[in-house]
Length: 282
View 1: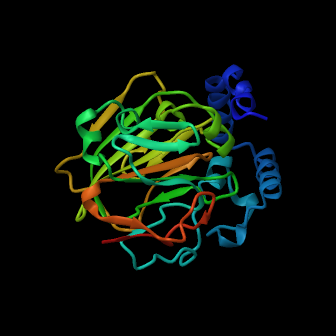
View 2: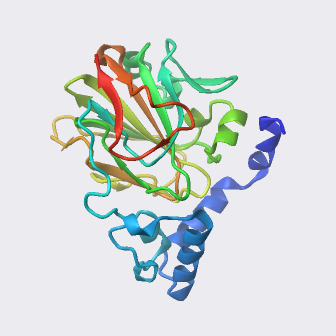
């Protein structure tokens, strides 16, 4: 089936209402019904609970507690490289930014300006740089960590659509990652600036950062921005920076001047784990 035909039902689906309804259910303590839903989810997606800090499905009071679960200490060693994977998941795409265009899938790209919420001056910093788009499936660990050490400068919540972000949708919806709801985080590092974007999707109830909490609680259709310059919010490589409450995608932008090159083993559709080597400098 042609990708555009495959995603046609998503255009007709009341994605906002569905997301708000299911997100609300996922945040409520529903006793035995919550435990039943968690166990069904574990079986359906073959979730490896042996890696979880708390491996007992019945101990989670809400589905969101389970979905945003922590891993046991040492489950994800941090590689001694310039860049490490911020998530468990799969590589959607990665490579050079062509001018200001980021490759999405065959026949589709989107601009860095659109991705960061329309800030052309900020987007220009990543002209001809490199990007990586990482997809988190339902079975994955859904906390997001730092690819390298950085100091937080700004955060923007950009309202948008709530299409699914699976590979089929990426092939069928033009500009997917720059049209969906997203939280754009701007950092400075020793190698220069970088951007880490949490992209929302259908039934992604919330996106959370460790310095703010739930970012998209209002969903009022307006762009919201927070300035952290001078506040000294510094995070180390591998440190948790946020999480999804139901899964989605992370997009990262790095400037040409950073000199980063990706690990040769990183190829589209490859499976990745948080903390493993992602890239090198020089």
